[in-house]
Length: 292
Length: 310
Image (cartoon, rainbow over all chains, first blue to last red):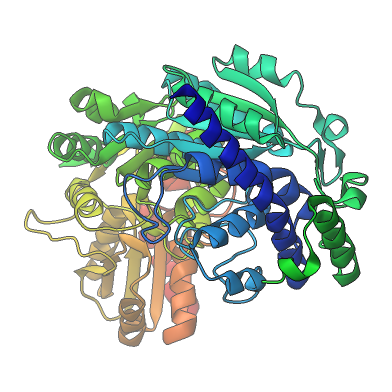
């Protein structure tokens, strides 16, 4: 029994690892086509988003408003291309829609919006609000006696917002244990490195002091991500926070080396081709095979 | 019957909360003052004391609404509506069934002074395309608006309430109709348009003008957004002279909304009575007198407006 579970886990990890380069390519193609957007923070978040959707989320892509679904709230709304890549793969919308990102009339708004795209559980983009919304969803689900769980993906720069710490305080008070927060800790924001702009450390100590269950993981290691999500879901009586150390621009070396510059600038065609070639080479994907 | 509109608000919420499990109420350390404490007493498991965290409270209410709840977020209007970004993004942009309840509106808050006065709240919230801006003129209207918000309104709203007592202006058989102007008195020389705490003064002033042979109509605008544009156009057609009276800045509130409607439907002269400066400490009566929001002030403003037009 135990070994079956371990085998299943390994199979899932292999699947997620196979999907990751394809999601990264989709993100880059989306942003190139849009000629605007946030590649660094989408590429740092994609492994987390993918793991949450494929491993944890109880949802129905063909019934996106199913009342008892688990919720996913992209509090760092600028990272939504990562979510769109996974949602498209899961069948929420046609793959062709990806190339309409940020264009007039597209359901794929520059920042996620509930009334533009079914399956988005909260409109976000003004940083620091998503955690409070997640708290409300968590309490509402509890009042409705639903067993559904809420996943909230946050950014490190966003953690500078005062409202985040208001929610940190109130979620401990109300013992909101059906919400798991995952921090995409990619260490950079628009004006510079997070530690220079406004350092958020010592982060684990802060959340523990506020009464949270805290774990720290490598946000690109699927085995660690899955284990942390399991542990977070098992925590009772307190909210759960996973600090996922990530790399801004992960998978594209020229972005990884210059993470601040690639926060909010989209790659042009040449950059995109170079980046995609690197991702495919690393993943051993033949260019012909990758054409879909 | 003189009652602060916050009183029937709290009572109605508590009454309906007992039988409607969808209703949740949040407050930011002012539950006695906003009267949400009445609900807390009746339904403690669905009342959330959020402490002095208005931003967190508003976004949390939006999350609650997304699970099928009907949420009321309560504080002084100045503190809650100044979290405009949370109202805009978490509440309005999610089309969340959340009512932002702002009590102690306007200079009527009195001795606490300007920082406790919301004089800009209507102007700000009126810009959100799906958010209803509602301000009852008396206790009867307040009760019916709360019933409407729970029973029928499917979206975000702002409910602006008074700390101070206001006289009843409606008959007991009054029926609130969302989005429809409420004509209280007919008249052909001047149309006075009030909202909330100023409606009573508008009626008293119109009565005195009538004694002098000046025929002034009085209309109560409980739904400032979406505004009843047809009714405003009708008033302009009848009199050609309109005067708005509100305990709010003359910029962007009822006066601004009426002028926008006139420009779009039936151009006419409009005089706006309201605040043109920061508020200050004083009794509500003194402040209403200073800013010409009482019966004497509305009467004098009407006279000078009519004289100016000749």
